[in-house]
Image (cartoon, rainbow, N blue to C red; front, side):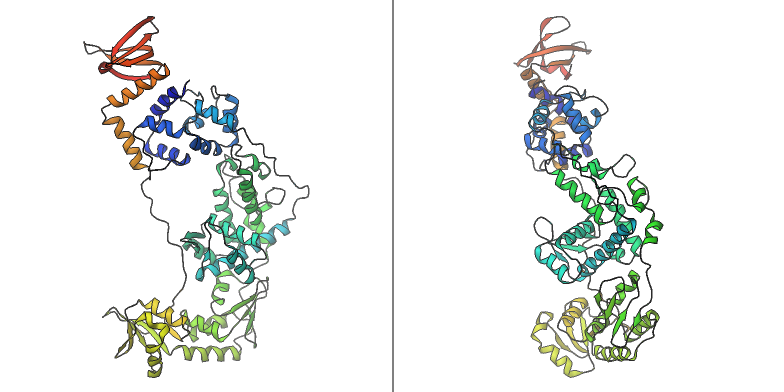
Length: 568
């Protein structure tokens, strides 16, 4: 079959697809939504260009790729045929398009060697320790990113500065760990790109409140579900990781990507170095659920109490329950990240907690309930002293005027705020109740906190309220229309409005150029229709010429009487 005949067949097939299928095909081929195609013949030629075909072949899993190669430009056998038809790589009767055959010949299958398997399986307790470490370290990364999002470079990866920041904070030991855990957080939907940053999502914030096993399970499920199609089994699990490097044989970049996926599953303790599933992950690998009880038995038990000491430190005798750890870290600096963590209270950390909405009473209540040793007097004194100072400046929105009020019982403090150059953007003005600003209350509050003033936020009834400085990623945008909608609309309009005559004319031109065998339906003078099977040979003067195969005669048919044309 010639290229022009291919274009005619493909154009007819494209015109018969629904909008969703067309959009998916154009997206897979990397077609620009602003393509200047005028009709489906242009589309057929466009999707068979070299670059789109290269992308289509790279996306083929091994069974389909091998089926194309085995066809050698002929007809593709079942069961691969329907999938290759849907990808516009073979005709509806299974014949490989000529352009596809040429592309396959020019890009032979890459034979990446399988991942070598290690002979010694990993002990379950070692894998469980890796699961615990990965979940705890990822939580530390998200905790840091809540207030200071992670910068990303143009490729989307962490920059060297961010890797160094995570290592300097003692969260990770090396750059590889940082990269893999941030990638895991993105795959699992716990972080999302926002401008040139990785920000925690609302899902990520909720994930931080979950227990260690639940944290592990959530990420494990989402990681499995995000695996590329060729790595998944029909049952919803994943195939043997030792074969992943061979999954997309037309894609020369695939072996490196396969190694990245394998490293992510290994980092999260879903598989061992030999590719075998961890004992608790066998159900996930088969498409079902993880055996969380088996994992929980191998993890250190979480604790819900700590030892508060006179030197203003807290010692957790084991992994502190995540929701308690998160709150404790709002009022104390976490000093060690071992299973028995330690925390240190300072005036600054207690002040930060009060700035965030805690009160002396709420701090005492929480720490007393958390402590195995009561509330030491030095810590109780520091809480009272810091809380007394932090009540000095109060920020509240005035509902009547809509402006923000800054109040203090100390007029000297208000005078200082009014002339502080660091606060000029707030445009603070004198008021009978203190100072006012047109900025919103949160902006005023954080400007004062950043300038290290002892500030708290109050509601209209005078009660202190919590202020969180979480910089979260924007929620996912609502689904929008396909970007290909205008292009597809133009293609359909060319077929329908151009009075079917233009479409018919283009089909006939393509058939003549290819000297193709076609079936033509002609409306006769008496109103009946008759079909002729012709080898098209000429088009001009409003007439189609061709040899009638059935009668073995040359026929000339008026184009105006032709109702439809299709491949014979």
